[in-house]
Amino acid sequence: MLNSYHLKFQHSKALTSPYPGSHVERSQVPEDKVGWLTEWEDYSPVEYTAKSVLAGPSWADPQINHEGFSPKFNERDGEVERKSLNGSYVVENGRPRNPAGRTGLTGRGLLGRWGPNHAADPVVTRWKRDRSGNKVAHPVSGKNILQFVAIKRRDCGEWAIPGGMVDPGEKITATLKREFQEEALNSLQKSPEEKAKLEQQLQKLFSQDHFVVYRGYVDDPRNTDNAWMETEAVNYHDETGETMDNLPLEAGDDAGVVKWVDISEKLELYASHSYFIKLVTEKRGAHWSEDPASECHE
Image: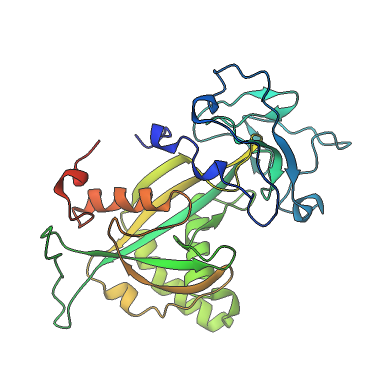
């Protein structure tokens, strides 16, 4: 299950207009023409790459026709991972093709890399407890309520898992820990001493058994026909609550607000994050829905 995008990840958010951070409208793609196997001679997507990407920051590739740029798609290219978590993707006219289908927009939009742009999403959870320290069960489902650390993104105002992009050459485990520290604990603004203390406390949580929730393609509003988001979402669960109780949550980096949020199907989260959270509740036997039918595995 973890290594393939589901039918439910057919484009929805990746078809939204205007494109994030712009006034650019995507060409409309009917649901039955999303897949590349469907012939569509009149398909005329809009070309768009944001100025912030074209400015050539360290996290972005040059344009495909740029002199001296010859990316090695479908493999590790120096420090840059151009392999997809979903297997090989097609490269057409020198450009990678989005494996999940058409998006109505070519170029890279806000994404730095041609092809897969790799992210990591740490889902840090604990049980909701009352003042006596007992787990709190949902009155309807009878299942214990799980909480996770959520951030409110500065760019779009939506609640999300505090994840981020994998740096070139960085191991996923390092990204998961670094992003959590930067976004949920504001580590970038801490003194070296405070940072070392945070590191020590977090080590216990991040070194214990963890559960890989999802690996693969993400239906993300930034995706284009030639650049797309992929992620590895990992659940770190604080069973007793003792580790996280001693860590002061403080929004930093791309986060506007950070807090513990009760998990249920009523949550509206950024990109595919609701789906990741649902998988965590299934794994932990926690509350998700008041309707027993929707709790069944697909």
